[in-house]
Length: 153
Length: 347
Image 1 (cartoon, rainbow over the protein chains, first blue to last red):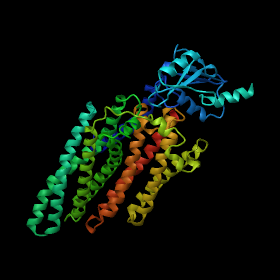
Image 2 (image 1 turned 120 degrees about the vertical axis):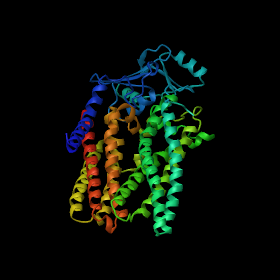
Image 3 (image 1 turned 45 degrees about the vertical axis):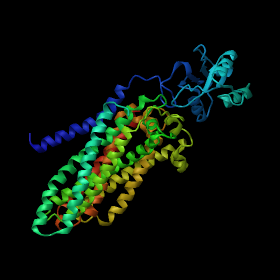
Image 4 (image 1 turned 60 degrees about the horizontal axis):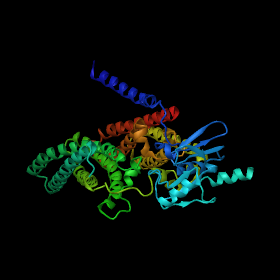
């Protein structure tokens, strides 16, 4: 093989490898990761927030702050918002939950300090132990969504 | 100091670059003085003897400088798991901000290094192009310019390597982020792009930014094609100014496109605009970015050859060098555009 032909073969192989890169990358990442819909961070089950739309679609978030940032950009509010009760680890409707802002950061990457609880007693206990404040109706996360819903009802 | 394999590699590279850079500084200043001082045969012979070692060192430094650029980002990426509040390189670049100890210098050092790395690679390349031109001449008329550029190249190399060594050595363990990682910086409406016209950055107008990205980059490719054709017949002369202006526009628009459009699409996160996240999550997207940088640098090198390489002895070889560099630029721009389009389509 002459030098010129070898160069051509090398150039062809190089370009083919470049073109194949996006396909290979996509194939390697074919299994979707369980990550936050806003910033792609790993979702800790204890702080998980989930939105469910009327069409059956859903998004998961690593913390309340990410969920609020997502909501700011949505033209329509989701049908249901679930937050995780930190005491039991179970999901509960955000409309019936109690929220506490305390010194404990739930997700270091976002600096979120708002905690969700199903029972008022658990929320008050967390507020007492972790120097927190119970959030009132105006300060609560997803307040705008709740206000819209209340008007509708 | 956080010790891992990348830190060891980066430290080793930096150490060699400091030694090489200092030696190059000293030798190139001495060679430049010798070049200015004498035109006697003895002086020229002495200069020639010095130049062999100097240029050999410059070649090694050039290779190491190019290598140190990706190694630096791999080092930053390897530091991500060290802090709980950090999820990408952006978070690492903020470590030390607001502290009072020696760690307060870390963010400035990273900013400096993110600027000096591309500048160093560009300067090294510009020197190499002039060196190639000079080698083809009979009396080496570009030696003075090459030595001057080599002094700048060596000084930059030392600055970069010293800053990198300082970054490696300064303690980082006790510092934590107080404001969160890239979500706080790139995803809020308060991010830097707010200073730009809404027609470029607001979500409903993204298609205009896409259009601008393709139009400007295809425009640069077309201009490069035209300049190549033109270079076969005449001097580039007055075309370098408009070409560089178009290049600067393409760099700006492409950077904005990467943050506002490409990053959210490639990451499958519609509101996450962090370009640093692309390195660990979509590593293949580094290929179009690297090709774009290659294309832009090649055009810059062609312009520097036009400005620094003009002499009656280079008249025959300069057009060939410029023609090839413009071709490299054209290849970089077109393949970058093509690969980015494939990746966006697949995402």
